[in-house]
Image (tube, rainbow, N blue to C red):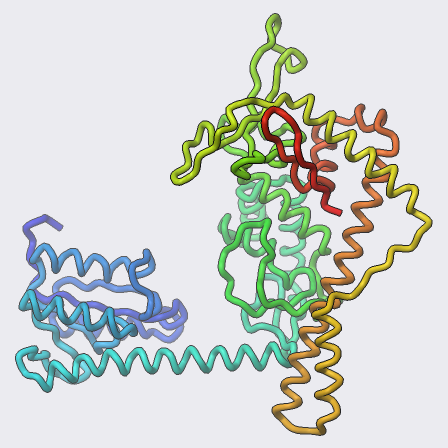
Length: 468
């Protein structure tokens, strides 16, 4: 399209979901109607009418740009709510048309809006408000439906690959579950998303996108839990869901919790490895050393110490990343460097000391005290159960039981992880001579399992935090 090209009649079509565009033919119907109405150029989006300013409504943004350039003579839509289901956006767009003198024709009403007529101007604004009202009502109904699912611990209608939903429960798909499990095994083996997507497609013609596979691997459903929040992408090191009911279908879990945790650690580590820094992040302590002043993670560099440039004749040191990255609104006075050998010696000493202390306490049973929140919820549940039968009370009881179950899971799993880490610590560092013979790859796995962070400042190690 040349820069001086003028669009005599621009059509715009929109549906909210891909399903409406494909299965329900909603988009196709709009496009056909716009073509019959004589539109010379037709733009289209598959996105929510309440979204604005993002890449999902790319064609809508292009229309704004064309209007500002004076290249549109007329706009046609099937209904005004196709423009937006957000009242302020709709009003802003119509005001722009009025200012530029560009008419807009609505096929459903069969008329072109006359902005000079106060009644038609008012009616067009009311349609924008009505569209947003309907959108908000739909959103409220959806939220209420999900709340009912949560209260009764039913399976989320969003079903991950490898599963099917039968009697409102997650059940392994008889055919896809095998491919799903193979995808997990391949990632644990190759530790690279693109390789897994290629191998699965070549063998099973199943198309995984790299981002889709990453989110799927971290889905709580795969380990027997039920999430109810939106599938927003999150970093692997963050919990994948803010509203999760635990242990809802352990008999249908396609991987173990340990496997998913291992996958999350691999994904997190892979995001730190790129280009020339790949060799640096093979270091056992990479990602664990932090500046004591600005709390920024430290980068690792190495340089030859003279003579033949072998790995044994290189000096490796950490330094505060703020020093070289020049982050906006952030500064740090730490200019020194910290030799890797010195930090690792301190780490081994700290872990050996911790192992000795835990070994001395091995015969003493660990007492775990329930958190106050859990005890308070139990009290509230007991009080509600004495009030008799009532739908509102029953709903409140179910909600409290779900909260208690989640807290109990976190309480018990926290103790389980704690004991696992203690076991690794005692078995490995009770004999530090043995540990010194391990390759860097094994050391790195052990360090990341036991160490939360090492804090350095003014040329010294000033803090050391274990994960237990």
